[in-house]
Amino acid sequence: MRTLIIDTDIGVDDAFALAYAARTQHLLGITTVFGNVAVGQAVKNARLFCEKMAIEAEVYRGCSRPLAQRPSAPATLHGEDGLGDAFDNPFSDAAPGAVQFIIDSVRAHPQQITLVAIGPLTNIASAINQAPEIIPLVKELVIMGGAFGTGGHSGNVTPFSEFNIWKDPHAADQVLTSALKVVVIPLDVTHQVLITGDEVERLNQPVLSAICRPYLAYSLAKEGFNGMALHDTLALAWLSLPDAFTLTESPLRVITEGIACGQTVRKLSALASRHNPFEGLPTQRVALAVDADAVRSHFFQALTAP
Figure (cartoon, rainbow, N blue to C red):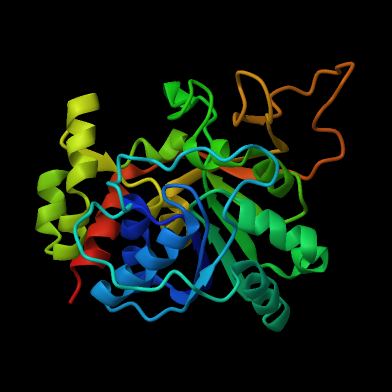
């Protein structure tokens, strides 16, 4: 069991990941960021979900916009409030600062904290920009984000770009080219781990069933599938079941402008080139294959346990 800070723009699949994390790891805190919803709504959502699911974790308020590019509108497939518009939300959106919490926590617990980023990477980039000395003190950073084209699994916002990375590509490029110990869990594997609407009901988790209805309706209308990819949950699944994932190592970059803005790219060839955008960069780990049955089995076991 690891000690985690989960950094999230909490929508429906983030909530599934939080429920799974609470049953498999130790949560030190939840830091929020813009993305699926505005950051204030993310604070409210995290507090509401923690109360509904009896999760004990403090919530912190992070960045409200990207580092460099113009902000884009929140997602809509999670409902207007990001949690399926299933519950009234009386909670405040005021909270202590997420970036300072990350910095202070890592300084206080060197090599003990795993950061799990399941939203845009703005808080993480801001933390290492403000306090670069924490980089070697982070045990590991696990990211749900990106798409590398394995088996046709490319972007879900543009043909090239996955949502979390596309929301703040400059932050993502800073993080992936840093000396942080990174594991990237991209759409290449998350699109392979699906759960049907009937299986959601069989979890016997009324809160999860309630919040995912608009998400399932969107999937049925757009893709003809009454279900959803578990996406963010897989960042937590890697911590519990690392042997279920096949990783490759490579320097990574994120394209920050043009028609491919937000695309994650890895070095594919050792051939010499006139300009090498990967020169001098550390290698990072990327999951490109997964034992979907093993991940699904562990997820169901964790969420249905008494």
